[in-house]
Structures are given as C-alpha cells and as structure tokens.
Length: 201
Length: 201
Image (cartoon, rainbow over all chains, first blue to last red; front, side, top):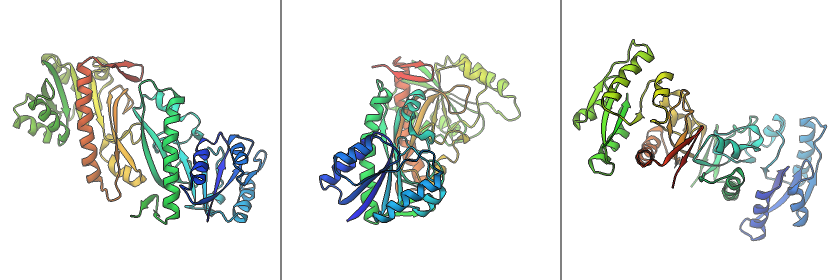
C-alpha cells in the first residue's frame, strides 16, 4: 500500500475529495495528514480517523521545521507528498530531498497568476477579466510555482461568477487532476525531463 | 454593410479564415487589408480582390505612421479594426482614437505569455511544459497585451507537440474566436466596463 502525506494549512476541501476517493476505493493508498496549525484539514483528518500530525511552524526556522516534517515522512514511509492549501514555502533542503515527489495544486493555469500564496487568485482572474481559468498540478522545486507541470485543466469563467463561485468550479477540476496525477505517479507514468513532465502511455 | 480593417504584417493564416467566412456569407461584412510591408497577408488580399493598402512603416515615427493608417480607416468608414499578426506597436494616439474598436488576437491564454510580439509563444509554452495553452481575443489599449479580454479558448498541449503543430491547433481556435468576437461586436453584445468585457445575452 502506497503512503501519501498531505501537507495542509487551510480548509482542506480538496483533501476531503482525496479522502473520499480512498474510502470509495477509487484510489488504493494510505493517507497521513500533516498541518502546521489548527485548520479545517486537520479536523477532517481527525473525523476520518486518518493519522494526523500538528507540527506548529510559528517561530521556527524554515529548515528546522522542515526537518521535523521529514522525520514524520520517513517514519511513515511516505512515497508522495501532496500540498493542498499549504501556506508555507518549502526550504530548498526539503524541496531537494523530495525532488519529484512533492506535488502542489495551484488554482490557476500556470504560469498565469503564479505566486501570492494562492489566496486571491480567483479575484485576480476576475479583475483581469479572463474568460478561461483553471488549475495546475505540478512538482515543487525551489522556486515559487516554477516546478514541472504534471497536469492542467481549463475552467470557463462565467459572466456572473464571483471569486467564490469560480473557486468552487476550479476546486472540482483540482480534485480531478490531483487524483489523476497521483494515479499516474504510482503507475510510474510520470517522467520528469528538466522542467517538463512526460506522461507515458 | 459593416466594414472591418485587418492590419497585418505576416502570413495571414487567420486572415484567410476571415476572408473565407465572408465569402461563405458566414459573416456579413466588408473587409479591407492594410499591411506595413510586403507579406503573405497582402498577397492573400490581392488574390481575393479585397481592397488592400501597403503603407510602409520603416523609418517613420509611430504616430505619423498611425495617422496615415487612420486616414485610410476614415476614408473607408471602418467600424472595427482587427490586428492579425500585426508586428507594430500602436501609438497611444491611435489606441485612444479607436478605443474599444481595435481587436487583437494573441496566441496564448493571457495574462500567460504576454508580450514578446507573439513570435515565440508556442516555443515558450512547450519549454515551460504547459499542458494547456490557447488564445485570447482582446481590445487593444495603450499597453502590451493588457487590454480588455473579449474571448479566450483553451487548447490542449499534446505529448508529441512541436511549436508548429501546437500553433496549427491554436490558430484554429483563434479563427473561431475572431469570428465569434466580430459577430458579438456588430450585434452590440460587447460591453466594456473598465478592463472587463461583459458579453450581453
């Protein structure tokens, strides 16, 4: 059984979809959840009796904190790390140690609307008057939203959209490509070449 | 009969599609073509006996050149200007004079891959490893690729794509949204509010 660690700091809507997929045997994997603070994602893990860790990040040096996380990942024999609304930058040490084993979901079609910790992406999309948005699943490197892109999915922006209604539709797409990306990963179908991800047939 | 002026400097693949649509009565409009140098677009206009003008831009000040263009637009009673592979920046004077009446087609999903005169967009998309690209029809303002977005269409990047094969697929999408945008314009369905284009039902 493959083990996936989800690192999260926020509501955990996409985490819920992942837990549901595992409970419904759509994905054969074991999940653990690590949060850097009290948050909805942690509550969801508790409720679903999924192994969970609260490792407070406040006041810690980035790399020291990341080493605490790494100790858990090693102990739990984690093969894949998925960042879902994880509001911390990773240290280069961590990004390097788990290179091509950390996935992040970003709520736009990168390189559009990169950076900014994802918080206001949908507002920015609406403010720019975009007619198409979407989401990106990518491997994490030392940069901000610069890592190799695994999957993207376009989402239409509708005339009456608010940031909230757009976010809801984009999150559905996020949940699809997270699941699809994880499957491809464990099937050995993701081949990283430089900054590109080739999806093997 | 509405008159559209196409300003072009390159091969004119999208211009061909527009001429075809008009010849097939899919679009009821009269076309004139203005080029700033000898190019494929000019040859196409000649071949289809469409009114065409060659106004050399070389060595001229931007605004003086744009005033030559404006004289033609006024004489021909042009209501809408469409830039198709037009390799010149417009002067602020021109952009202001025809505000919300100049459309440009850009071969990416703006704001991704803005700028750079469109020449290497598809190569850049492939180099970044994007899985989704597309195109944007927007009104032109004084900035570079910053004007109000009218329509966008997403195009999937395929595993085996080269810049050339991707460009071909994106151009099909360009031709669709150019035609769709022109129809909406003449139907009075495009309402510009600040930097946003509302499409009226």
